[in-house]
Length: 376
Image (cartoon, rainbow, N blue to C red; front, side):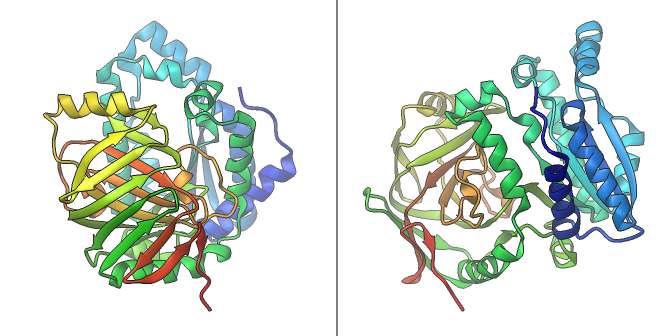
């Protein structure tokens, strides 16, 4: 169960999310979807949206009733979404989803068919958002739990505090740096990632558009198709040339592996690349699962897929958002077609994090010692 939070904090969060991130305007329709655990936050989002002059629709899923329906009716009740819900989303200008359900362990134990149904809903959600240009955000306070805190080896209270504080950063703090970094990653040729710990990796860029999550979804983002954001945010990322990666990464931050329809934490480790793909690796946590996944897939070629630089000064240890820590450098390897790349191989992705590192584009420093190089 989530702790209670001051109403003033909830109101400040709601104002920043609606006014600065979603740029909600008078007369617009906003759909706020929540689970019972995050209902107090949703109520304040509804209030702030009304004060802006927007038209609100608040949808609530009661978690005890949800699990009771599955217990009594079977897993075929899991993730069933009716046409009326899709219709409400389609008619919205903006959409806020407060993550749930909280009982992640129970969700994990559902049959594979139920998990596949949930994944298909996610695909349909993104299709509708893209089709109708709906400015959309997801906030994950509802996914925090003692179980996941143990798995990611983070303090649960700190995790929750960062999710709130980092979501209230003024986007203007990140926009200037984001634009500059994106320009260098889009126009550059060669990238070098290094660290005193022995990391030295050479990559090549492919002149592809960078994805910028700077805390704002404006008309320009909608026009470019970048209209869904997980908050808190703050990251610039670009897919890289999938045929070139030489050197090694000695990661020093938590990572994550997505394989076998599962989300698996990865500990810091050593990763060697040759001929554009992963050659060898050693990491205490997550390595066994990665080897098993690769074996099941016939040991496919795993290329470098995406490179990112974090922007958010209030993120330091949020699981799954470690790449958005200011100055953090993250390498994604594996499938990247869903991010605009050309690797359409098996649905396997792993994210390797590096803090305190250096990143250069064509010899020009972008990040030095974990700090973004200042530009006027």
